[in-house]
Image (cartoon, rainbow, N blue to C red):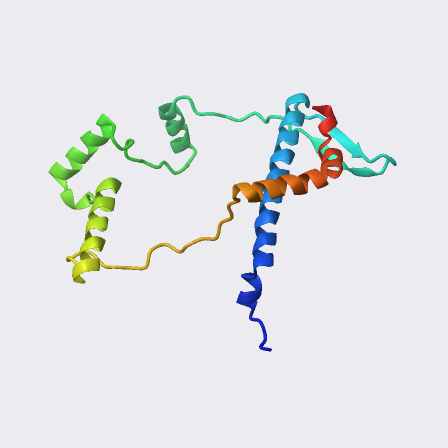
Length: 190
């Protein structure tokens, strides 16, 4: 009998089932943990810390809520820019936000005085439509228009998704550990 490859081991039905169900259990536990942390956040005061002890008095750790820290916020950039200039800080000039009237004025100024400074782009929807057409034509004719090339697309990814049966299996597995989960999540507090 031949040796089983690593790929065959990984793609074995039992291994696939284990990975799928592990991901589902982790997802459920994360949801429970996040809910518990949010509930604690709501009742802890800023800066409050609670030491967590087990039933024998051994310290398991602590849970705390950080205090908010004051921050300085600019309310008048022109006044602050003058201060920054006096202090030798670098001042960065940016174009106005895309689509605003100020942006359109800047583009008109550049195009009328020094068009070589303008960077040409095509709107994302236009690029998508054009690239889909180029790809469709290439698949049929093998021709690629000037300015285009055919490249590998983005790499695939691995995901897990449970079926209805898989969700019932996870629910059953979780029921089998209800006492453990209840203790771990302190569900009796809800």
